[in-house]
Length: 192
Length: 187
Image 1 (cartoon, chains in turn purple, orange):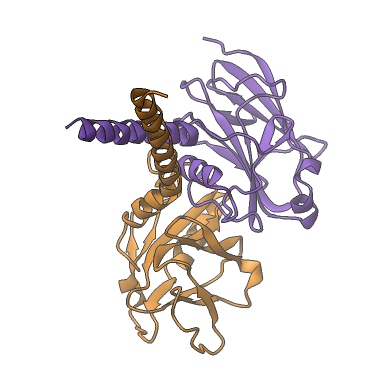
Image 2 (cartoon, rainbow over the protein chains, first blue to last red):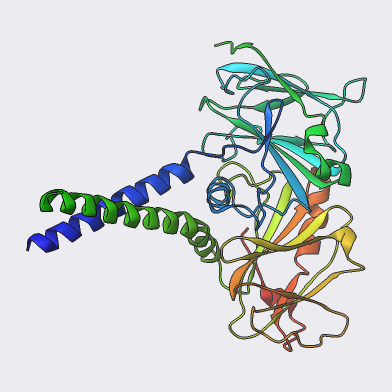
């Protein structure tokens, strides 16, 4: 009987610790990658070459990504000064076009899903973003309506931005650190 | 060293090794679990045309709201599949995913001459001669096919709606005039 308890307890503890630690390691979100200003790029996001942890994390957060030969992705969960993006604040995203066939910038809630809003507005892309006189663009991020390019950020507090570049130029694929990524500037607290 | 102390150390060692094995197996299993879940969302070898993603109707997390998706879980148990898809004016891609969600193939509209015309074969199937058709070998017998269409503005959606209903996915050798019967709408 003692022997049964001895081995059964080892198996039970191993299962609890093994499953718990795996869930923690996979569920704590992405880490590492290449940092480009406020943005992070994960070279193996969507790739069969990703290590098991990156593969599991990306499949949980956003499955069925494309290999980087077709599209590359940048994720921002902090502003340009390193403060977590939070819907209690308004932000101004300032950017220019990318050397890719097309691009889009999307806001997702803390569950990595689109943020509900009455305008059904979740993103901007190179064909529908309004341009500044210099050819660049400014997108306002806030939970109250703004003029011009505006993406609602909801009331869930944490949110993230996801930048997709489809068919990026070879120069972009060779050196993502050279991509001129948008600045995410915190402007102030939301008006209640 | 006392017998009791040896016993405790052995318990700790056995538990640690088992815990590490369980940890790694769970991490490796996550993509397979997600792949099995995604392929269970629709009938095998039947295409599903999803609505443009919006809050509340997303099939998967981080769906692209500037894209319209059509998807098909595949099962090659009954042999290769023949996939054809017309190409729209704007961006479109066809991508294949293994059951562990690895993206093992992707091609876009600029990389094909005319329509997409592909035969998908299983890991151990002979690469038979299919004249003029691209043959792609899947690393797993089951998986998923995803068609992405750029729908950056509302005008493009009408074109996409008509063109994606002409996608065909059939077992090789079986051709039918009734293309609509293969298509299943989620609308």
